[in-house]
Image (cartoon, rainbow, N blue to C red; front, side, top):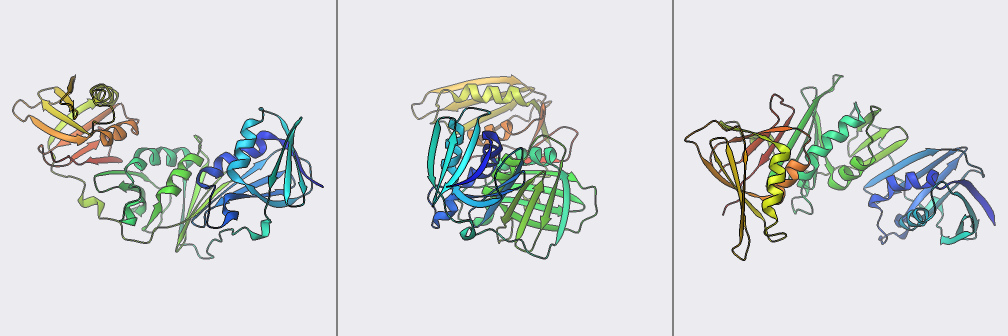
Length: 371
């Protein structure tokens, strides 16, 4: 029996929590259900990948034991560590193909696989460009647009997010062909225009990995990959091969009927009228008249609900009635942090442009339902 490691529970659990999100229990290659663990001095590196995405996190802490590399079942190890009390000391020992994990009187025996069989992703030797952005800024940007990505759409390029460098700005765009979200920020460095489509799974893992601090994320673009690196965390992803829709053509430019609304008041009103149908409600009807927004829902049992809120809509004759997917509107509002939103209408049949008053960095397009 070989003693591998003595350390605290959280030294191993923290990197597991950050890397195991996309690890499936059942894989075509059994070793991909495992995480790659490497100890070097007082550093513990945990790596997970599915041949498309690879996440690695370095944890530094007091630990004893010889340097080693090994792979262990990711989800199982995560569940075991969560079951152990906080701040517990853990010991890992290797016995043939198994690893014994001990915490006080508690003992687990789990199967391992050789680290040399683990298919670590390799980064291209040639990089196209690199930019740096504060991780809190990138996390906030992702939060406001990721909801609009498609999921399992046959048009593969929609199942991700466009990362576009254009006019010295970083632009993030997501659409599922029913709605669109766009956000941009100015870059502090001069970078040539470039764009890639990042897979949905990568975007969700990246958002989960980022923290609310100002450490810079280094985003490096390669011919077929993108890497994100910040403070001991590294995410490598393949990109989606395809041409992203010409999103700028979808953003309305002639919507001249403007409604200023408090975001939380609108969201609360939508939640109230949605109660009538619970899961059955899909359509939300909005009626705009002078300084009043009325919302109604109807379910399959011919029951309905109605609520209204005060808004700033200074038109006496331009009343508008329009219908939206209720869940889409909810997600737009839930993922915004703005106090006030501006809804720009053309009529009751065309898409609505949602922006933040006085700002140009964020735009969302809500396409109406045909009922």
